[in-house]
Amino acid sequence: MSKPPHPWWKSATVYQIYPASFLDANGDGTGDLAGIIAKLDYLKDLGVDVIWLSPIYRSPLADMGYDISDYEDIDSRYGTLEDWDRLLEGAHARGMKLIVNLGLFDRMDLVHAWFTASKSSKNDPKRDWYIWRPGKVVDGEELPPNNWKSVFQGSAWERDSATGEYYLHLFVSKQPDLNWDNPVVRSAVWDVMRFWVRRGCDGFRMDVINCISKTDGLPDAPLVDHTQYYQPASMYYANGPQVHKYMKQMHTEVLSSHDLITVGETPFTHESSELAAYVLPQNRELNMVFQFELMDIDSPSESPLLRKPWTLRELKAIVGRWQRFMHGDGFWNAIYIENHDQARSVSRFGNDSAQWRAVSAKILAIFEVTQAGTLYVYQGQELGIKNFPQTWGIEEYKDVASQNYWNLAKDTIGLKSRQKAQGKEDVEMSDLLNSFAQKARDHARTPMQLKWNASPHAGFTTGTPWMRVNDDYREWNAEQQIGDGTSVHAFWRRALKVQKTHDVLIYGDFVMLLEAHEQVFAYTRNYGSTSALVLLNFKEGKVEIDLGEVVGVAGYTFVLGNYENEAIGLEEKVTLREYEGRVYVREALLD
Image (tube, rainbow, N blue to C red; front, side, top):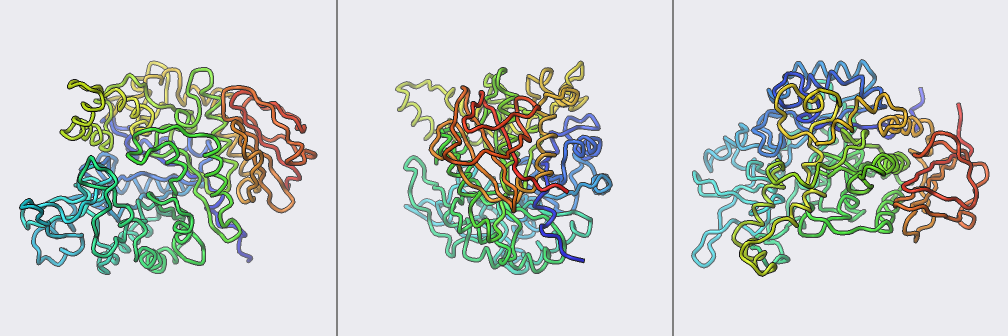
């Protein structure tokens, strides 16, 4: 029997679920596995091939489940291992696969048995399972071992009073980093992975996988922010000297024996050659990675919670670079514009006004399904869910990143800086809240808007939801959209079917057209004898483009558009309406 020309995961549509906010089946206010099981038919009908669950392990929830106290058990908030088995069985019965979130890198919690043993004594056998260092004394004051800044503000080190040493935590203080340089630690990680493979999982999404190896000596980071002692230090902990050795070992020990989908999260890295090393097939590491260059397009260096303007030309340059990068050598992209760590795409990259919300949500769907790579859709994206209102106060922001940054701005140094900038004692914080309203991770975490009638809390729960439901749920929800053939949900179903019908949209090469155009993103995809032409008007305002000098238009057939379903002919001069997107295919391969 001949081997298939492409692995199954390349053409898969992966749907990410944030379990706490998907559907609460028992009325306690938090989504659970039973709620996900109840909506498996909804996911199958949408066109989902793979379900990816954000962490559901036992956790004190210092970072919403990413601080894990037991990697081989389910948190009681979400259910039991038996519930997970039922979810897996239900997904497989419908032809879908299930992948788990693996955070065995920096996402251990302080109450995990490994860390409890490690901090108990300097002589404990698990002491060097984590990164411990003595502090340093400067001008008579004890300071952490170096000046590394935590991703969530403050020092990346926490002092343990029992032993007088500090442990490293790149994220919150309740998430100590494992010491991957210890081979016994790596062996324990492989055992956890094998546990889930034996249980039947179909793959792994790996948190911050590029941060498992640190620079020898853990040197001080260079001074770039003169307002703080602690400095960004990703140059010393991302893509470290042993990372690829450890990834290859993971592949040999666990991944190579199974037909799994693997995707690694790789923040702090835009350099293509760095990321290629994780993905190129001959390296035997991962199938693909989540690179952050597009997600960083509107983020200043200070924080992803702040916003800077972006241009379509910048977006085109980023997408074009990654679509073309080592395409013929096996590099494979993970296509996403939303996840649990990003604000809603229709608010961020589209137009979420009442007039243009649906149309611009649909053009973003076209933008995604016409790129080469494995497609990732985040819960609610298929409905065009937008950011919650700017009028919500800071008390509605539950994410540790939002709260920590807000508190930093209000502490002594941050307060003095604001007082100086504003020239008054009683400072305004509205600018920061405005930034949060556009960029905070919280927007992705509001409960799913499932129903619109008299159901309280959008049908998410019969109890009190752990986080407030977006105010617009009565007008914008799944129940209403499923019965509407013109809805965002209906369009996503159609777009996914079109993508699956035309291999050129998944595997074809990428050729940019009208590269300097400030309003239109146009490109062709070519695969064998088939070509696709994609035209996207990213702005509010009609625009005419002339294709005559950049591509031949003869023979193209209209296959997808976000304004109407009927075929629209293609001529050299094309007028695109506000936020209009069109896809044409020529010489499509038909069975």
